[in-house]
Length: 302
Image (tube, rainbow, N blue to C red; front, side):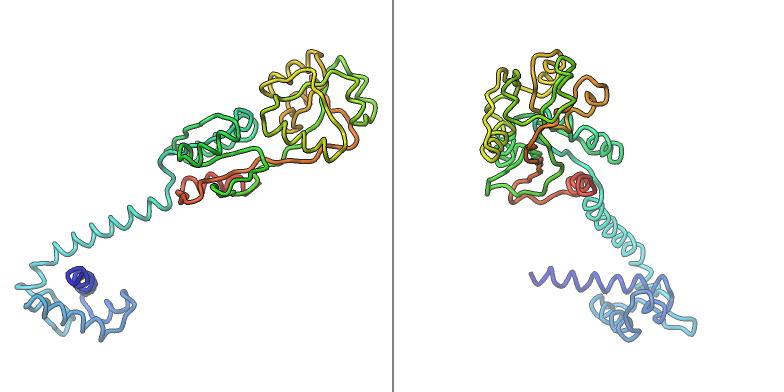
């Protein structure tokens, strides 16, 4: 410990020596180092005492390196300080440059509808960062996060798990009922939710967060939906609904393209279903890298 402390003290002395040598003046060196001139003078005397040689010749022009002392060590001191500065710059660069790999866990739908544009934007800004995209259900994604198999998890809310750190909600989802041209007459009226039993209902499969959220909504609104068809993903549901197989329950945000093209339309139901969300979580004791912070900041701006 004593040797380490002595090195730290000597390093500061060598910085003073180098600055005086470059400036050729105690006064100018003091100004550059933001310390007093007596402190500079004392540092030089202390280093000369430790080395046992005179490092400078004091002349009327200022401070000149002595032939038998300062000139002998100047180049090595300069090289050593440059190496130390380079090491400090590398550490700073690690904290301010996006590099490495970000492992992201999410469902296929979240990757497609929520993250794809963000991933492309981030890649354009930080091409050195690699992505590992791990697709699974939200419950499995949370488990992968806790087991260290992904760094960031985008999941369907709600999230209730004390072993992960909830970072925030990145977007909201509004579950709505949609239909295709076969049921075009439904565009003209406001439909009570209970009347939807008159039509073939299509819903996402039962073992999903989205379906559990719908079940909670049913309890709140006093209705109960019995699906005629259950599907594994939203894209299949949209395709089947567009072909007239029934009325589907799907997040409005996932149907923007189909609404614009006229392939699907949203039913005006009363009451409307509660809004839910997609959140982002990280492992409880993980320190965010600069790249991860930069990626997450893209969602904070929305």
